[in-house]
Amino acid sequence: MNNWKYKKKKVESIDDFPANTLGFIYKITNHTNGKYYLGRKTAVSTGRKKLTIKEKKLPENSRKKFKQVVRQSDWRKYWGSSKPLLEDIKKGDKCSREIIKYCFSKAEITYYETEAIMCSGALLDVKSYNAWVSAKIYKAHLLKNK
Image (cartoon, rainbow, N blue to C red):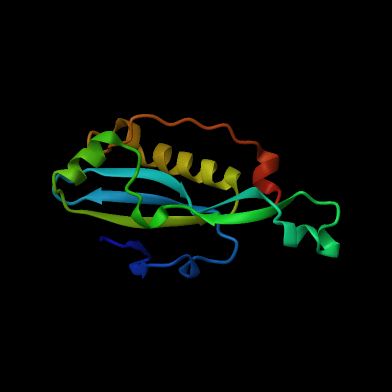
């Protein structure tokens, strides 16, 4: 499998990410035809899980029904959401995956993906697999953790 790279270093584990990373912006390059794809991937997600009977008996959980859980996504084996790119990969084209930027909030992920696509001119570039971009970003959400 072709590993992710960040600044030319292999990224093989979530432990290789900076602390509190939620996701990242990436570029997949098809070296067979010279095309590329810019996108985003969430590395972890948070959710709720029911407490077990044992956990409910603990004093700190006396009033709780759920606990917060963090799950790792399928980022290691992810190759983007572009169908033409995935078809090229399936037929054997040689591709590489590069992490451009680590992000620490959903607002950052949306902002930096949109910035990468728009500022690179990917939507106007015939060598880009990118076909659309959509974003709704609130400034307050971006500045929240700054």
